[in-house]
Every structure is written in C-alpha cells, then in structure tokens.
Image (cartoon, rainbow, N blue to C red; front, side, top):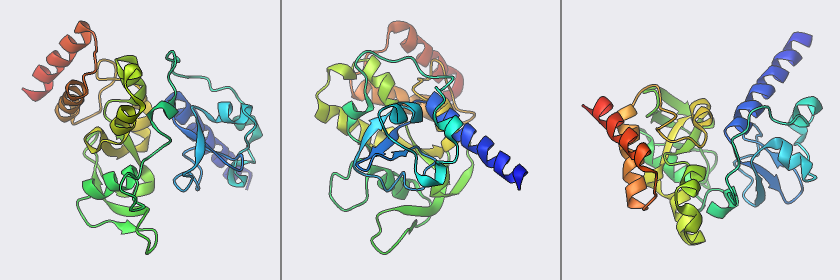
Amino acid sequence: MKLRVLLKVVVVCLVFGSASAAAQLVKKSKSGICHPPASSHYERTKSYLAFDSVYACLQSGGRLPKSLSGYPAIANAEPISRQPASPGYDRAQFGHGWDDADGDCQDSRAEALISASTTPVRFADEKRCRVVTGRWISMFTGAVIQNAGDIDIDHVVPLKWAWDHGASSWTKEKREKFANDPVNLIPVEASLNRSKGAQGPESWLPPSGKCQYVSRFVRIVKVYGLQPDQAKFNRYKQQLADYCG
C-alpha cells in the first residue's frame, strides 16, 4: 500500500514538474479550483483564469481538485525549472484556451483531433463535443496513439515564441486566430510537447519528422509575418537542407 502511494506521488511530481517547465496552462475555475493538465476536469473547464504553473495558481488563492489535494508538498513547491518570462507575455493574450468559433461545441482541440485521426473518432457522449479515442500518427515520433488523453495539441510555432518575435504588436483577434489556426495545431505525445515548451527549431527538434516539422514552422512564420533574426533564419535554412535533402 505504501509503495502504491509513493508511486502516485512520483507520477504527480513528474506531471506537475514537466508541465511547469514547459509553461503549461493551468486553469483556475470560477469556483477557485486549479486544474493542471493532470486533472480529470481539465478539458471540461471552459471558463477560467490562466496561470503558467500550479504554484502561481495556488499563490493567487486557488486550490487543487480533491483528486490531487493529497500532495500539499508538491502543490506548494516553487517549480524548479521555469521558462524565462517574456515582457508582457500572458497566455490570455491569445484567448482563454481553445476556441469554438462556429459554436458547434467542438473546440479547436477537438477539431484538430478529428481532422488528424486516420479513423473515425469516438466521442465521450452523444453531444459529440469531446473526443476520447481515434488513431493519430505523431509527427514527432511516428508512433500511433489511440487514446486522446495521451495527446497534447502542439502549437507548431509556440505562443510565447510568437510573442517574442512580433505577435506582441498584433491585435488580440489576430493572436486568437493564430492560437486556434488548424495549420499551427498538431496532435503529439504529451511528454514531447511539454519538453518542447516554447522553443523553436533553433533549440529543439523532435526525434523524427524533422523535415516536416521545420518546414511547417517556417511556413507559419512567413504567413503570419513573424520576425526571427537572421541567425535563426539561417539555422532553419540549414536544417531544411540537412533534413529535407
């Protein structure tokens, strides 16, 4: 029994630690509950304040859901590794989570999952809002994933990276469009999305699919008029030559 509890603590540590290190969105609901990605209510929480770590959410007066409240030492620890803050950057500048622009209850995460699945997806219920299973081939590894809960929707060009390279001067409407643009969204393993964090190809590359990943990154940067410096552009050109032949 003690071993089982210890293993649960280790798992929660890893989940919280990796999420914090990658500046993962933590949702504080109207009732004051802080939902990290590990929370079973994370996807269902649609109205919330956004924080970049569990620690920051708790410091604002929030509390963990009951299913995670048995780990106070973890919850109240300052994250060891955190991305440097960008002046003025806030996840909320790109909208509050996934958008449902057409009002059909399928937000941009669900639509990305539906579009990328190589088989018809299965929904949580007859409302057909939340995707639970399908068949996705990860761009980052080539692995087949069938459980939607194992997937993060990666922003090919991360929001914080975009902010640092020109998006800070955009209108809020353009930033929200960027955050929900299907071209900028790909289903991948949650662990790899979190190791990538807010990095571009100049400092992070996936284990496989490098040509496809860098090509799409550069195309999105050009379409949205983002402005990496010349050294980064030269790096991308070299990567395309190396990985795309």
